[in-house]
Length: 337
Image (cartoon, rainbow, N blue to C red; front, side, top):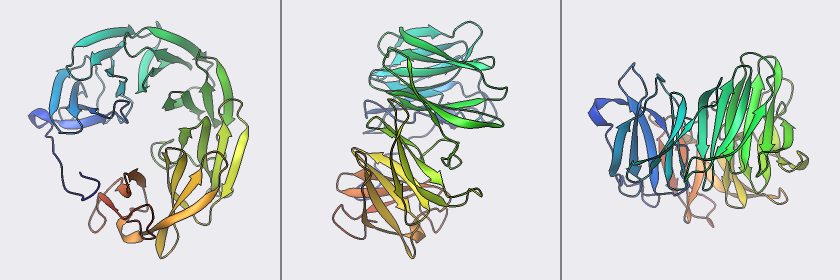
């Protein structure tokens, strides 16, 4: 869709009537996106690349993987100009525009690749290894392992998620144990372990739109109290040492937090209209940009993005009368959508 008008720019049908089951969560090149798909009830074992400007299918091929069902954003990613996908026993790299195979990075013995994320100079892979896991950084161009850091196991049934590929930042949790965030340096050394028990990580697939990594900081939304209801503020921790940089009390419950260059965009649930706020990354200073009609925002999940001189709200689910997406206004207008 065009951000300025909302007009549909292109549409792409999943080949063969199959169902989409994965998508690249972001793209370092801003030109190519990846879609995983497969037969209903079958394996998510097909990968499609699409030109994001035109909607043109660039290539499609089978990936030797046996994953079934929705794989979310951890199955495929774009790093520099390489499309990477998790396969059975390896991570595969392809030219993002032609699909020509570039490299194969085998899974370490005794481990299984579970999830990955891409950035301009990194493809970060989390490999489950029994009761522990390894964080692996691959060169997008060659697939060469740049570094590999084991994370000691804490308990059976643990889970993990990649919050950022550059720098490498990983969330780690286990049943009955507090969640934590691990930050890694350029050579794979652990720079900080940040307790995440005070952060609200329940919003969308665990860590999701409520957590941002930018400017050397981990930023999250705090819980308001023992009951976990509502939110008390937005807090930032330094990735270099785990120290708290700032804490911003918010006037209302936080619905969405999104990094936007050197600031954060925050939707807080003011009434009768929701407020769109901006928080400065360096010092945590807060100011209100404008207001958004509550009628176009899904209270169970929404994100906000800046697009040129406009703001776009994207709802996780759009059912009448709430639209899938809505945009408008401008940076200097009080009514932004």
